[in-house]
Length: 273
Image 1: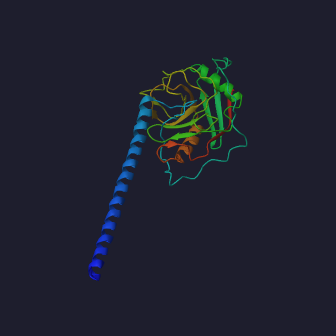
Image 2: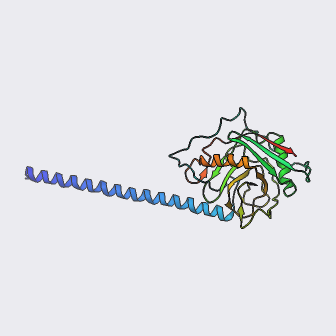
Image 3: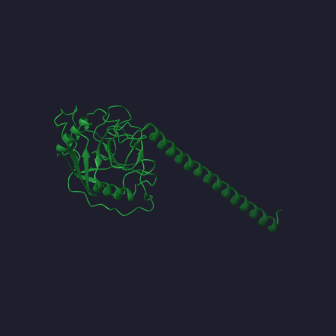
């Protein structure tokens, strides 16, 4: 016969054991969670390093996007105010073409790309003679309204510092249906594998001659292999717009994601000087 006091002690021991088991289980779960978090961060860091070392600022029908970095970026938990206006009414174009457009520009003339964005005007002096296929393609696509109402879908703020645009899908997977050759990869501005601030260059799939419509604007000197066609230079006023976009940070807080700023190209125009 178990006395009341013995029963009370037995129940107390059982309660203590249950508490210990719950604490042990909680510690185990915490260790697993921390291990998973560390693993995910490791994958992000390794993936970013791999993208950086192989130079895959991707775009145009490739589901992997470009990797890069920006100056002070806002974390996902402390999102900076949106410094940009609402987009103009309209939707991105959906038309594609089977082959690169015929050469129609004057290779000896100067051309300017004007991006009227929700964040301000970005003017780009194009390198026509050095990258005629690229400039000709931009002239063709801009004339068709291809870039109008498209989001700049990617801002990088870690290691490399670029804003990526030119995809009507807004996902980093779209393109015009054709590709153009790499050009001007030995541009004198590309020193020590660095794309200087103000450079505008083509994104690609990581393979040669796979440029399409996606491009990136460098707002801070960025170490990259010379695999991306540099075809223009942003004006001083345009650089102020890029800095404003970069200051707002990107959506993931990890250094590579959609801009917090609402960056939409309302209208893109190529003009012969």
